Length: 107
Image 1 (spheres, rainbow, N blue to C red):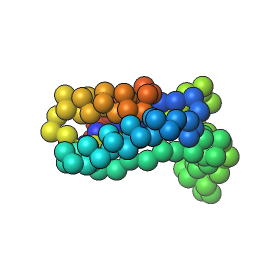
Image 2 (cartoon, rainbow, N blue to C red; image 1 turned 45 degrees about the vertical axis):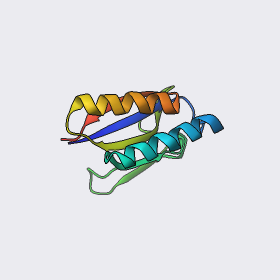
Image 3 (cartoon, one colour; image 1 turned 135 degrees about the vertical axis):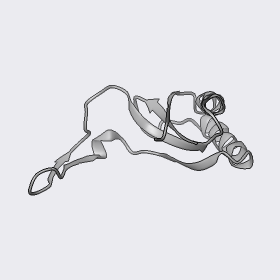
């Protein structure tokens, strides 16, 4: 089963040097343990474009879908046999990046 682990922050690209070292070490361990699928950091929501293609012509709007103080700053996608393993990985990831995270299974 795959799980999305969203990193929650109120600024983008805010990792300190020591946090980046911890994240790199965590990522290497996740790869070595066979749970790695994909991960990445995201640019500030102000760089987003929202597209509504439901009408005859798509409508493009600059900026985030929703205005909020905190936002999705990055993510991991893990492969794990069950939710307990995914939660353990997410807790370790939260510790490594020093941010709150949210875990959601893929359907």
